[in-house]
Image (cartoon, rainbow, N blue to C red; front, side, top):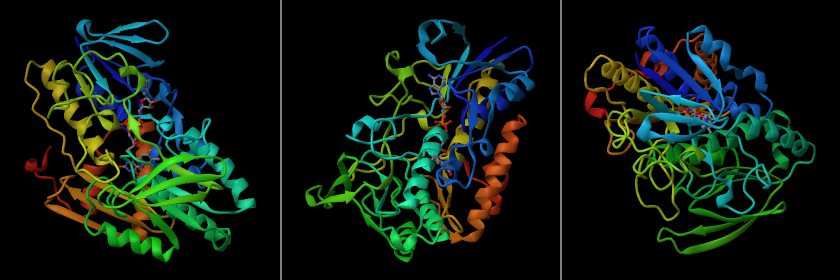
Length: 429
Ligand SMILES: Cc1cc2nc3c(=O)[nH]c(=O)nc-3n(C[C@H](O)[C@H](O)[C@H](O)COP(=O)(O)OP(=O)(O)OC[C@H]3O[C@@H](n4cnc5c(N)ncnc54)[C@H](O)[C@@H]3O)c2cc1C
């Protein structure tokens, strides 16, 4: 009998729990530990922030969904990993023994890396959690009563750019719907060396495509941007040149702003044993998504360590997106099952990017196979169908999660929809 403990129950952790429960016989135990009682569909947060979704549309309680599937649920934060003794300590003092630990803890949002950043004690909004998006919607409504200049984008060190682009376009669309767009100058700021880089060196002609979209929507931009400080009145930005030297300093009015923060590993890893995490607290994994030092600890999702693609004048990280996360779930599930049957882990996740970026009424689909260049498949296409596909994905994924079904949506449907029959094994990590 094996005890599998999964920490985190979001985009990565919840499908992981359903998948492993289905793969293992009932004499094995599966337990989920989550510091949130609800599942939140993170990709819909930008819609919550402009009131296009209510929080209850994109959240549901975890416990009944998990218990129905024979999975134990503990609503509590994991506080310490005693990897030598295969024990997980919880913040309420409980100790869980495990044979396999799966870490799906996502990122810690490090607003404190820039003075004045963030919704709690700072002067910018966030859409990273549904709670942040609810707060942003409050401010958005106030802003729409007295419109002014908006700033959207990402600060130095960010690895997740898609939501920033999406939110800029969604704000633009929402303002046009309200007939307020003519009263709102918009500036997009980003550490990326060019628009559409996204931490991936661009995807297809994402540069031209997104620049053109920004031009058509009258969204100005500043690349190689380093935010030095934020006050309630202004956002101070150093714009660097390609060599990293100061090109220009900007002082942008801060009436309504949303800036993505840099990520690091969550607090659980502050006292992690040597070799579990890298210096920024991301879990180190091998080709089979296992930690090399503690091979019965697996990890997936935004919380794992991936080195940056290339040196850029202002640091940017590599994003971890849905298809990659789905691939990691599939691989870990197969590997733990193999281990319980006395076989060696063999399954590797495909590290590829497919991103459906919503733009309010239209959208852009990005495909990067494999994720980092040079690639076998790389393209970006715009169309209304992307917006519709994203809405369909939201409904389908939420339906599956509520009903305990973790079928790989990207592999089964989205790759086919995009005309990509399958991902070759040599495109694996
Ligand atoms: C606003 C936004 C929109 C995005 N949109 C897309 C998109 O459209 N497509 C796409 O491919 N990717 C998207 N992403 C990127 C990525 O797919 C998501 O961030 C995804 O939710 C990451 O999943 P995860 O499970 O790794 O981490 P998370 O979703 O962050 O989940 C981690 C969970 O672990 C819990 N946790 C953390 N520490 C502990 C602890 N000590 N004990 C117990 N529980 C703990 C957290 O509370 C959280 O519930 C988006 C990201 C953001 C921020």
